Amino acid sequence: MIDGSNGAQYMMGWGAPNITDFSSCHSSYGWGCVLRAVPSGPSPAQPTRILGKGYDTGCSAPPQLWGTQRAAYLLNLKGSNNVEVQCLEITDHSACMEFGPGNPCNRDSYPFGEWAGTGIEAADSTNVLLKNINIHGLRSGVHAGRLKDWTMENVAIVNNSFVGWDGDIGANNSSNSGSIIFRNSKILYSGCGETYPGRQPYNCYSQDQGGYGDGLGTHRTSGNWVFDNVEISHNVSDGLDLLYHDGTGTVTISRSRFEGNAGNQVKVSGEATIENSIIIGNCGYFQGQPFTWNPSGGPYFNNCRAAGNPVSFSYPRPGLKHKIYNTTITSNGDVLVQTGGGGCNGTETVVSRNNVFLGGPEYLNNGDDRSDLFYNAGAGGNGDGPCGTITFDNDYSIVWGTKNNASRCAGKPNVFCLDPKLAEPPVEYYKGMAYNANILANSPAIGKGTILSGRSALDYNSFPRGEKWDIGALEYGSVPSTPPPGTVVTSNLSTVRVFPNPWRSDKHIGSPITFDNLGLNSTVKIFTVSGHKVKSFSTSNGTATWDLTTDSGKKVASGLYIYLITSGDNQKRGKLAIIK
Image 1 (tube, rainbow, N blue to C red):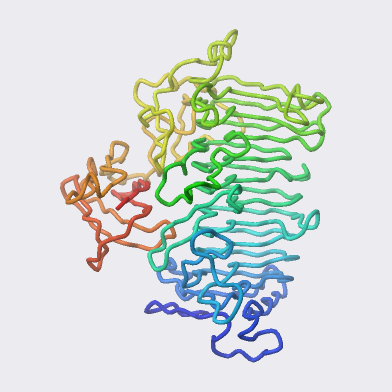
Image 2: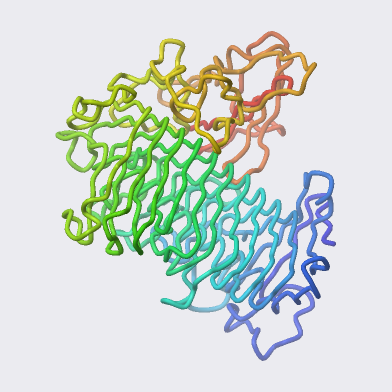
């Protein structure tokens, strides 16, 4: 048990207490000052447990493990089986970026500074639970391969300057197996530094600038990968990159959100199912942002890498079928759904039901062309080989704003080429942080879906779809949770307004941020993107304002913040930008 009371922090690396192995740990080679591997538990029922105090009561004050003097990693799970790690914050105390621009870490001589490399290092590890873990401000959040049966619950991997989850521990020698499960977790702003102590993303840099920046990426892998209620957004390359899945096992994505990644939002191989999810393909999100690295004279940030297609499916072996159900997808890339690969025999398909496809101007063509709905790239990108003729079986869907839009509905009475009437006001290039994919009262999506036998009857918010399903990720009137029977609902929060957003000092100085159309007796909490509470306040009259200060009265810095509004049993989350 590790005690995190009173903001307790525990240094890890050269200079930390109780260092005894000076053969591998010395000031001259501080990267060797790391923990030995966590001992394995005797069985899955008797795991080794590393627990932050309060792990069983909500983990309100997780103890902080912080790395210093270039420690290579903080938690070592190499060869560790039957392990449970709960309620920890893993970080360092420096704003430097090990391989990043503008503020590089000192890698050459002691003192290296109060920074470390990777949060969790793992290999050849089976039956591990990570729960209520917050990894931020390092080079890499997790570097792990050859895993079997790992579960991540409420894990946050945020503002790690090279990569979020790096599954490549050796070419063709990193494959995972069993079930790799992510629940209620998020991977955000990989490829961005983190200010210290402000914990805001900065100097986000792309592959063309020497970075990497996938949210989650692997080398060749197997296994059944599950993403349930996960957000992988605003990473400087691909969001979810499982392109190297070999088809042994499946990929299941449910009630998850992918938005503003600078490459593909979802790139998967094998056999995948995406349902009740929101995929916002604004791949040019980083253009012009105050936290993006774009030096005068270049190299410039690489927006919309790999054509910026929001969904990319690959076929590594014959007979595979990818499926998309009740999902809302937008695009500023070349196409909304692309297929490719070299393992086809002519029987492969993409099955699409109850989806909203909203095209937009292509970012890489300066808006001179629009996203197409679907393209078979084949083996080489030009529709060649047997994977160039994959069937796109699309029905009960809405298609709007795409290239050759009208042709996508011809002869299909249940495919509607109509404006889906989403709540987010239409723009060519969305630069916000949480696209509102709810449907309006006049949306043609209402009641036009087909009931899918064997699929979940709960939408993105776990809101019941009822007897007539709507098209898209969200039912009309959907709220984040359904209160238990007998609960008095104060507000469904669907009409909440938060403005101005972004707040800019050159336009809004002296004005607060207003939260309007709240329910009576609502509370508002403001957090940093890495999960630290900044401010909380309440309202009794349906409106609240934030004066951009913390609970202690200090002015907040420029950056991105998360708000959480609670009214009765309903909640609404969103993002705020403050630009000073």
